[in-house]
Image (tube, rainbow, N blue to C red; front, side, top):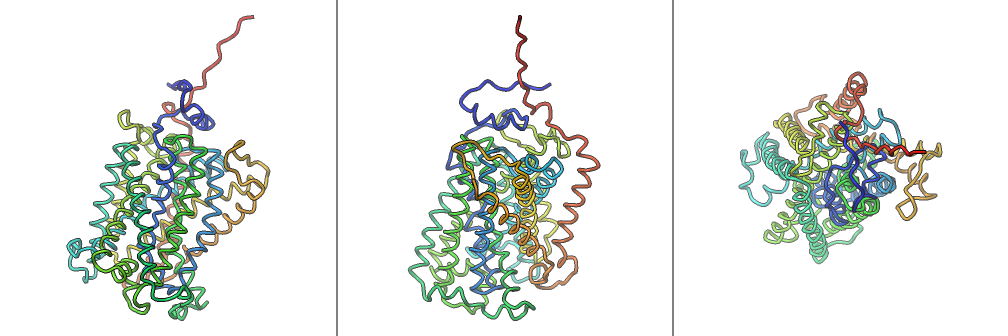
Length: 516
């Protein structure tokens, strides 16, 4: 039996956005402006991304890999602008899924949502693995498996540490959005302060000028296309950081005034990440004692911090990095839950009625929190004896998110070209006459970077022994199976069941008949 719409009240205008999708409001609106900003910036997480893959970017492209940072920003900023315009119009849970469904069609929406959901689960595992890059640097006591020199010591220990983090994010998300928001906001505040402090401390220790970003360390020698080939490989390190800004919109059903706050949060999150992250990377290259050692391409920014700041201040900063990784994993898990809830509410996942159930006590979807946590743990277990776990898992997660974003920007471009795109009303964010140009850039960027990331290069997917064809082609195979197999399931099974579940459907009151 469908339930009637709640009476209009404080959140009546906010809830009116849901009516367009046929949903009744169920999630509790408690998140303010800073909470939505914190959700976006904690998903991007400056310190997590830069510290997790600096070693890869530097080892693949030398100091000049820094230029991939502004390159990725320009492309992703175009995507973020499109998302901000969509967030002003449709601030609903499962943003990518609902946007693609709304401006494209139900089939494309399902595929975009499916790709984003799987990518988010993979990303939880990838982010959690960052514990291994930081904790053993703080103390060898955190290397529980062996001493770190064995063939599988690092990969196995990474899984142990990541498991602890995923269990934590699962519990926090199960206990409601208010607890998540408090932890996330505190973590983001610490991360932002730590980023500024790190920038200042690196700046006072600089030993060389900014021209360091012109050095390639001869990394182009092993590529047929010269340094361009090395640079495109290294750009993975920057591509890994600047995504997830749509989380601010995905929490729209739990936010106050989301049609105004979500667009601002999306743009502020990506701009702040670009500025702070770019300065951290640049000043790290300018302040590290030497550029030729192996440590930069193995231990990454963790080595730079300890080298420049010394063991005491350096380890203090690494604890801040650990906090950033924690809230990043928490934000990724939170976004994945809202996406699963949004798809299940439309009866678009197996056991949808269970996955879409909102806890009457915590006013949050508890079952998706547990299921997503278990699936993220399963990804870790499958890869437990693979020493190349970091780059493979990370790359696959990025590729699928870029594809999911294309599932939004591409139909949005088609809608613009056909004159069917209607931006939000007066006073809300809109690209105006620049919309078409920005949308074209977003689509071209997304397609080009997806091709770059999925290309089966040994340097990314099978850089060291053991050498297996399935590792080199792992991204292509995984994405093909997830996209092809998932859509086949949807087409033959799930699409025949699609429709807003009765318990989540908005019942439009029928006007009483009038007498003549």
